[in-house]
Length: 420
Image (tube, rainbow, N blue to C red; front, side, top):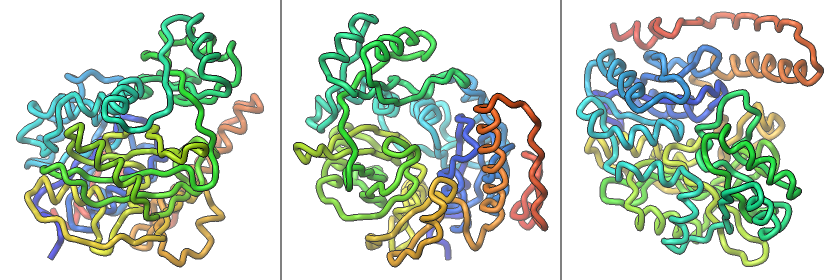
């Protein structure tokens, strides 16, 4: 008998056009292995996710920058195809923010946590997060929001160099602009130049005090705040390797005990009244030893599968169980377990892992996405190299994987065929 209520499907939604979002594949596998029917609303045309045996159907997503009405129309159309109430799982910030605001309009077709409607948007907005941390007493790097080029120069001098520049709402950054959500600023003119692009970025520029990285300084916490506000599933993890190095996503992470990080996560979500899945990033100050909150993502983090406990519970399964009225099992943490993203840390993927390990792309029970990832990654890397060299020669398409089907977005998978 499945731990989850297999009568209730899950709909994963991602507006972001990242074909290498391994967190989406992790959610597909976690729910699919438990017998849940999984629908994916995302652009998967060039993504290994579409090759997973656990995907029931792929639906066209809203366009990047879609309005709330457009997102609502797409989700209602998907609900008609699914045919019964489903658990909705946003996989990026833009979708999480829209789902929070549209919760009443999406019911009863979708099940969603009862979090305050505007709270996902407030915690995802990096300027608002600084204010929330100040109000709740959570350590946060000193943050200034300049209102002119001259003020940007003055703030950079006040904070000291280097400093960190962030766009308040990174999901609004236009594709192809070359603007990065977060970057290190090493000069006053650079801060001034970044401010000049505020209109293009679509949200305010933040200048933030720089906390240098170091050994065991980068931590994250993934959790699920249930209907009562109790934080369940998930846990604290140490970032062993990031991509890009020092400031990027987790390429290698380890589940490690950290009572202070756990206490900060529970305190913050409790005081805000947050409900649902969340992903927090912390950096420990080398001078004071305090953990500073850097980011609050109101959705599953890409490496959430690191925190699969002894009962098989992770944050995505916890969400499904809670919203369908089922009890959450009490499992034990698997300290020492690791998570490796193969395309960012290939050598780490080859090493032994005494505490247990999960790979982002390859799985014995779902091999094709892992194979497809390497073909697509080779094209991605070679394309970037050619652009740097200024060449425009066409890239040959990857050879088909023997025995692997390539379904169109609306064609049934093996799972769908078996159930029809």
